[in-house]
Length: 213
Length: 239
Image (cartoon, each protein chain N blue to C red):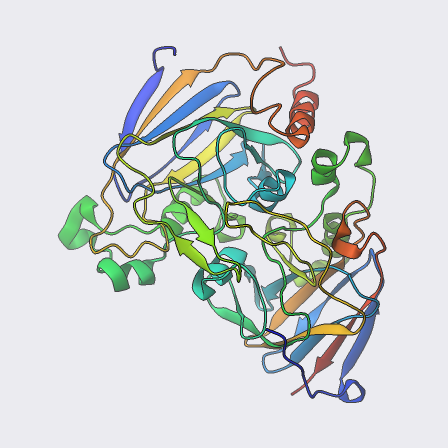
């Protein structure tokens, strides 16, 4: 469901542009609100969340979709951890639907999906691997890199059990906003995928904004 | 089919793990109907390589799993192929039952009173098996729920199809690389039947026939041909 926010960008305590193919890692405390803004449209933001005090507790797609009884994320969705605890809630969404089934692109899965010789194309998981290598202070390792959210991505499930990758339903200026229910670390890969329509074949920047209230 | 090298029966609410070698075929049969088998795969030579449900689904553009589908690791390799399936639909997105949910529906797990009839849950079952290999909750990936069908409507609402698996339903997995298999026979997390589900599952292990060039799973999709090519590279130099 599409809902808007009254939060003003000039009152945000953090504004950070993430270029396509880059990562962002940082802390968002309980009560703070995070917005991911699709600056140019049709851009997938592959996102993971961790309990800031215990990275073994992390976003769990299965717990989230099971508890809400729905495979898509939108306003009102509560993102749950692998301990089934509420981590964040989507409080505004001008896009209307986000994917959490399709996972992230990786150089290895690209060889299967597209071509054995596409293993050297940049992929979300490589951004995450660089993040955990460069930022060891967050205590996140390869085992913690799991089943993520693809904000702004449209992956409809059909009633006969198919999974389709459609053109994005996002557009320039669309955003999703989440209020943290516990202190979390957010890890975003701004997706560099060039082989399917998830980024409109043209990966572009997203902006991250954080408000204290 | 060859005589089974090994066969056993997993009672309801149980868990188990075993290492299977490349070329072994595992057939699971729901003995009285309504079974659910949670299953996870790890590479025993590198436990950081594990079953990846998103890659499995998106590589084959499917939400359901059935004959022809391959079950992928996060490293672009195939742990196992579904070579036989009498059901047509197994799911891999709903995760596991949990202790508090099982307690709310069927009563708390209680070994003191119930002995091995206690109400084990899938989440704790996997934690027990993971710990045997030095793994923990951070390693618990999205699992398979064999014998269980969940469908979605146009808005994405999820529903477990009741009585999907009847007595005698079976699925056969052919392992395409050495695999550490973790499994449990705890209820599906969306199961709300009046009684704690009680179907045992029989398991048999045989030596599979060699994978031919015209193998059904290998040729089910072009992606699977490339997955098999990745496995071939992984085994390069082996007999």
